[in-house]
Length: 235
Image (cartoon, rainbow, N blue to C red):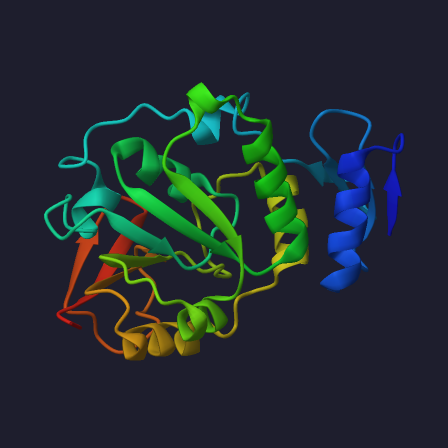
């Protein structure tokens, strides 16, 4: 895997971070630093980048309110508190959306390449366009073991093979899955989260017809293509 493009402070930062946090990059041909935001290319010619400012489709969605949006209803509509721990940030779509609705979001990402893309895109965003979200490089399990913070709700959107709704076009989503894998440990993550008692409610995003990932949820909030399984009363 090559870091291409002109030498820059950003390119050096990525090189140091990736050396300190090795991950499987065999599917990646290069990461191109020719533009303001790095672009990730795989061996089949697919590419993607994260751009909070210019990607209107994912990060500037038409919003209802904290009381009306489905994802927010599952989190309690603000009545259960507004401090959210996003256990798997991915592209940051839901984390940013929740923060735009008025939640304070701490979003974890354990893949070093995806974390760097999130962190770089957020730093590139003008201050006036930022909402209350913080990206942290960590797995959910390690973070929950080490943090002294508590949150009102946890939110988990694991990668799943039959997931129908995607934030990326098909080819870009293939590349993303190559990097992050299938989240085969999702049920273990949920179990650890419930045991941690760092929040009073855990919301798990699922395809509408998929089986629950961990036991039977206390309730669910269904949409047309997805549903939110709710595990509550944990505090």
